[in-house]
Length: 318
Image (tube, rainbow, N blue to C red; front, side, top):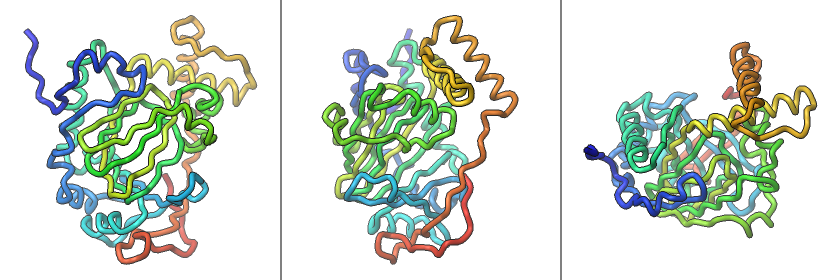
């Protein structure tokens, strides 16, 4: 007898789920009405964050130029003031590990994954995470790819999401390997405007989620409204194997000059590569020096753009 699943994933039928993980997939959800994403809850969460608990960026909203992306920080503000800066400004906030400040986000994450597993045969995951995105009207997320499996859940506002094939030329193999091994940032991928002709385009509305194949490059442009959304990420068994292959191939390519590397995840060569990755992890050789970013601005709800530039000062480690 199948037990009842308590979640907000109504409408996830077998017919709709046939493409799960194989193609960009738009599905309904009911989490846009959840109390954890109210202004009150978000303001309370923002007011408790430490410096390592978030990213805050600004960027050009009229062009696709990653060079305009800048890092900042939040200081001396309560959560309501931060939300006001988002409404009036041009900033993007990513809240990391919200469950460390409110365990209800961890309960929510487990509920979501239990609901998916109950509907998608064989769906088993590890390394699950939930992050929250709060962003100003017209803000962009530049062309990039993520290492784990990703799902974007829209809570408030509307954003255009463009998802590209996870193969060359949209995703060069060597570029992906550098991202997986931590030698390059996710937004280091080159975006050719000609790629847009092959993108799957979605205007994501509250109560909709979007899941795409592993490592698919994507970019996002907010409509002219404040956006609140959250992401969930995970690794399946197949995701983990592809991670091992990309990591090992990146080491072999960058450190030893090996070319013509196989992408197979079920051959004897795969197990050798998995062993190589384990060795790197065990010895700590995979750990690179932390990226050092200069905080160029501080969030300020009374300033144009919702932020105030800082004079060159200390640096922020991430």
